[in-house]
View 1 (cartoon, helix red, strand yellow):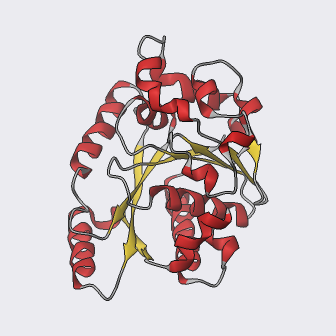
View 2: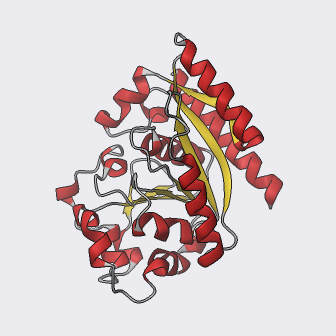
Length: 257
């Protein structure tokens, strides 16, 4: 059975999609079978892997609405061992479309149960909101990874997210747990980023991964080339940082299994 991990933070612009893509690619690079699910209507995870939305009909929305089976909507990426279930612009209306659906919180979980044995890891890139799509992702997940940008408002909204995670544990998924927090966009030239790091580590302790993701031009450039940073510039500081985070993820999981 695959280990399912959601990447979530209702605050936008924290590097959530970039983190999901690059950890997925890093796990695939060590011969893990990986499925990345894009639950964000913007579809940036697909774009970052070179997919043009108009060029394919496969999407996670039709899976959630049970219009088609999940295996019919999975695409093979250029990264060996890595597949993607892409987003759809129709996800923007999912709150209303799924309002009256039976077992709406379990739609993604039920679909993943049918393919879980095909993968070692299923990673879910959540939208920057705590609505029904994020609820579906967290209900289907074993763990959560929370990216936090190294800026003044890093902790803004985190308490609400933690409350949401706790509510989902109580209502739909008692086994859900936080695997860790990733500090992103770190700029050592700015004294504020160091202060933010200290604040986050003092607040959450060993829940924060040791590796910090730096601001790095290669990370920013990679999506425009349709590649994870690891395959765009393997030697870049950004790619190497994500490799180390992926190692921390594997090590953290080994301690829990």
